[in-house]
Structure formats: structure tokens, C-alpha cells
Amino acid sequence: MNISLFSGSANPRLAEAVACCLGLPVSSCHIARFPDGEQHIEVLDSVRGHDVYIVQPTSPPADGHLLELLLLADACRRAGAERLTAVIPYFGYARQDRRARGREPVAARLVADLIETAGLDRVVAVDLHTSAIEGFFRIPLEHLTAVPVLAEAIRPWRLPHNVVVAPDLGASKLAERYAALLDLPIAIVRKTRVSGEEVTATGVTGDVRGCAPLIVDDMISTGGTIAAAVEALVQAGAVPDVVVAATHALLAGPAIERLRALPVRQIVLADTVALPADLPLPVQTASVAPLVADAIGRLHRDESLSELMSHG
Image 1 (cartoon, rainbow, N blue to C red):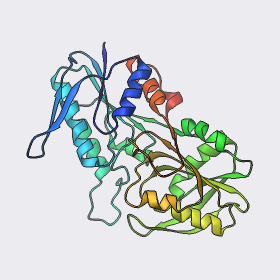
Image 2: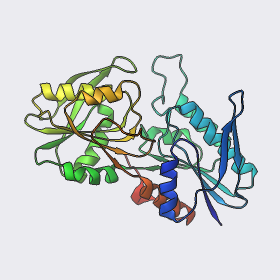
Image 3: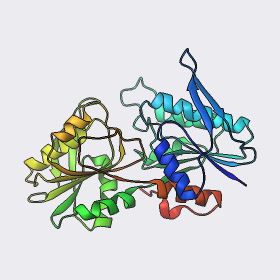
Image 4: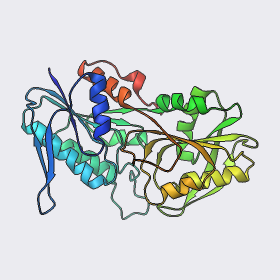
């Protein structure tokens, strides 16, 4: 079966890097909008009988990028693709995985239903906000992790007195994986969310006095969680010499200004979403392209992905 790889408009640079790792071209498609704002997708290369992979994170604007993915998938299916896989390096709406106040949608489940309805056979995602989302799908979801990639990128910045810090309880398992790879102790910040942009830290579990924090999380959205964690760590006696690592750099709203105001020595980010050019921050990018390309190659050859997957 021939293989075809398409890119949406969300992160074409990543798709091109993945294609380069696989020794493939990015297949041609036309993505535009009609004068009334509706999206128009046209697949320009033949995909009949092909094993098709569509690389498209559903990063901001999540609605537009999600619909683009669905339209691309439908176009490929109607053009005769034999097998369709959505490669979603960042899965938008993942934080809406339950009803927090009662009269709310479970948006992550709805997105899963939409993806299935578009005719996709499989999903590949990287570092989901919660692994419970896998249960929302009736089709296979391959949950890859970028932690080993980021841990290697962090290693040159590692200090003997570092401590790996989870900025909230939800990131504790993630922090444990970094700590195991880097052979470092772990601490957890206790966090309370006030609103979508504001959080408060109520304390730190673990000894951080005299330690340089290495804060790890699956994403940086507005930067509020990182800012609150740094404040709590410094109050607990940590050295104001911080390294931050995250898989998904959404950098929404006041995120850049918040991070600029912190005593951050280095920020290590994966390229699951397209990063703004000329960020006024000490940023190092670690590419997940080899990881994603390895997963696509193994899926195409019907080989195991167990070495690449997240198990927590």
C-alpha cells in the first residue's frame, strides 16, 4: 500500500520535517476560504488505495484547525484512501474532559465523535492533557510521549542541585517520568485555579530549599500556572534560577509577558504547535518530527509502537 502525508495549515513546518524524516514529499492540497468565510479543501494528488496520514494539531484557533482536519479527512476518504490516520500533535479541547459546573458540554468527547464521523481510522496524539481521553474514542488512539525528547534537550541545562517540579497535581506523573530520566528528586506545587487565566499556589510538597527548579508540564497556555509555581517555590526557599519544559507551547494571552517577568534561565519546548517567530524569551526547541515519523513508519508497516507511547 502506498503512503501519503498531508499537512493542514496549523503547523506545516512540522509536517515538512516529518516528511523529510520519512523520505517522502508532503502531498499537495489546496486550502482556502470562500468569500463568506467557509473553508474550501481540495486534495490535488491521487490517494486512491493509499495509507494516508494528515498532520494537523488542533492548536489555536482550535475550531478552524479542527474543521480543516475534518474536511481534509473527508476529502481523502471520498477520493478513495484505503486507510486514514489523523496525526494530532496537540489535541485541542483536551482540558474539557468533564463537566466542572454541571451545564457544560464534554467537549473532548464531542471532538472525538467528530473525528470518527469524518471517517478516520486511527488517531496519533502527543502528550494528551489527560490519558483518559483515549477512552472517548472507539477507534484506536496512539498516545505518544515527547518526554524523552525534551529530557535530552534539558540535559545540558541540568544542575546538580536541580529538582523536577510538577506545577500542579495533574502534572505529577509527568514530573516522575522526567525525574527518572534525569535522575533528580521531585516536588509538587499545590495549585488552585481561580479562572481560565488566574491560578494561586497554596504550597509545595517536597524539599526545594536551595534547589534550582526544573518545572515540567504538558502545556503552557497563559503562563499563569508557571508564574504561580515559581512564586511558591521561591517562597519555599528555592533558588530563583528556573528551567521550564513543556510539550505544547500555546503561549496564549499574557503568557509571553508573564514568562519574561520570571527568573527563567531556559525554556525548552517541543514543536507540536507552530511557535511565533522571534520570541523574546530564552527558548530552545526540541523537535518531535523524528518521533512522529517513527510512529507513522511503524503504523504503515504494522509494527509495535510500545517504545514510543505514553503509559501514564
